[in-house]
Image 1 (cartoon, rainbow, N blue to C red):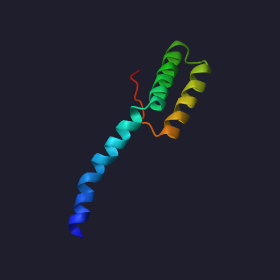
Image 2: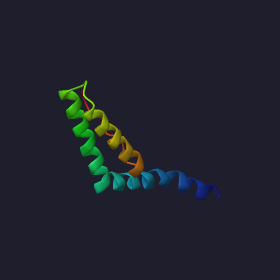
Image 3: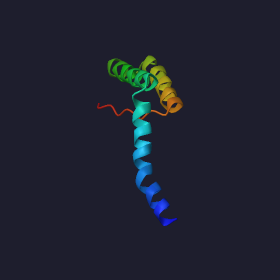
Image 4: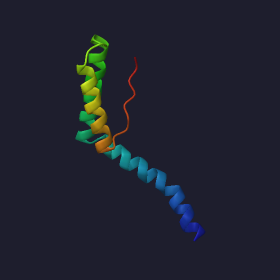
Amino acid sequence: MAVLGFLIYALAPKYFETQQAERDNSTKCKSYRALESIAAALYREDPEGTEWLSKAKEAEKRRKQHKCSQLILDK
C-alpha cells in the first residue's frame, strides 16, 4: 500500500503537468492568449477606453472555460 502511495505521489505531478501543457497548446488556449495580448495592446493605447476591458473579460472567460495557464504580460 505504501509503495502504491509513493508511486502516485511521484507520478501524479508529471501527469498533471503534461495534461496542462497539452491544454495550453490547444487552439482554444492559443486564442485566449491572443485575445489577452490584444487587450493589453488596447490598454497601452487607451487606458481610459472600454474596448480593452471587454477584450480582457472575454479572454478571462476563455481562460477559465478551457483551463488555460494564465498569461503574465509585462508592462
